[in-house]
Length: 410
Image (cartoon, rainbow, N blue to C red; front, side, top):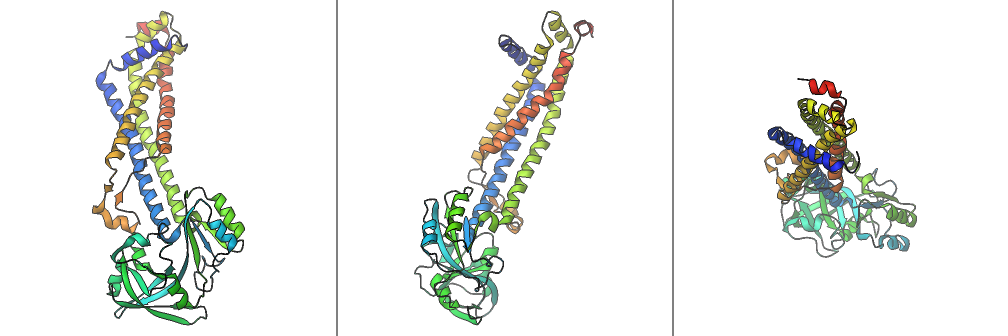
C-alpha cells in the first residue's frame, strides 16, 4: 500500500464499518469488554499478589535475612551467630538498606494460669523494628515495647484468647537455653496485636532482645539479622556485599526464604496468560465472523474496484484497515474502562462476605487493584497482533476474487 493510497483506504474502511451500525457496535462492545476484563483482572490479581508479598515481607521476613549456616533447617538456640562485626556493619550501612535489626527467634512454650501453647519466641530491638516488620503498627490494645530491657511481652489476639489472658496479666515463657537446660521466665503482657494472616497471632510472642538473650543465656549472640531495602527486586549487589563481608554466614533473599510466594507469583502470571488467551479466542471468533460477513456482502463491490484497476493488495489493505480501526477503538474503550475500574476501586474491593475463605488462603478480603504498565502492554500487544493475524483470512478472501466473477455474482 503506497502512502498516497493509505488515506483513501482508511476513509473507505471507516465508512464501510458503519454501514451496519448495530453489527459494528456489537463487535466493538465485545472487543472492548474483552480488553476491559484483561486489564481489570490483571490489576486485581497484581493487587492481591502485592498485598500478599508485602504482608509476608513485613511478617519478620524482610528483603534479606542472615543466619548461622544450619539455622533455617533447624531454628534452635544452638545455631546462633555473633553480633555483626565491622565489615558486616559497613555492608548493612549501604545506602540501599533502609532498616535492619538483630533478633533472637527460637521455639518456645507460653503458659498462662489456664492454658499453654507452642509458639515462636522472638526477641526484638523495639526501635529498630520500625519500618522493618509489622510489629510496631499492629498493637491495638495496650502498648508497644518501649525500652530495650523491659520485662514485657506482646501476644497476638488469637493467642491471648486461647490462653484466656490479657493486658496486665502475667505469662510464663519456656524454652531451651545454650546449656540445653529448660529456661523459663515470667513476663507481663503489655500489648495485644492484630495481624494477618491470623496464624501469626497464634504463632509469635515478642519480648525485648535483651530479655530473650538473658533468658536463653546467649550473651550478645543472636539468631538472625533481617533487613529492608529500597527495592526488593534488585538485591544482587547488596547480597554480594553481605556475603563478602560474612562468608561463613547464610545470607539469603526473601525469594529463598519464602519460596511459596515466588511460586504463587508465577502461578498468577500463568493464570493471566491463560485468561488472556481464552478472552482473545472468544474475541477472535466475533472479529473474524464480522469481517467475513462484511466481505461476503461486498463481493461485487470488491470486484468492481478490481475491474477499475485497484490492485488486490489494496483490497487486502482495506479489510485489514477495517480490522485495525475496530481493534484501535476497542483497545481505547477497553483500556479506558479498565483504568476507570481501577480508579473506582482505589479504596479496595471489599470481599469480606467471603472473609473466612480468604483468610484460610492467607489473602486479605479487601483487594486493592494494582495496574502495571507491563500487564496493560501485554494485553494490548496480544490483542493487536493476534487480532491482525485473525483478520488475514477474511482479507485474503476479499483480495482473491476474480473481478468478472465477483461482479456477476448474485
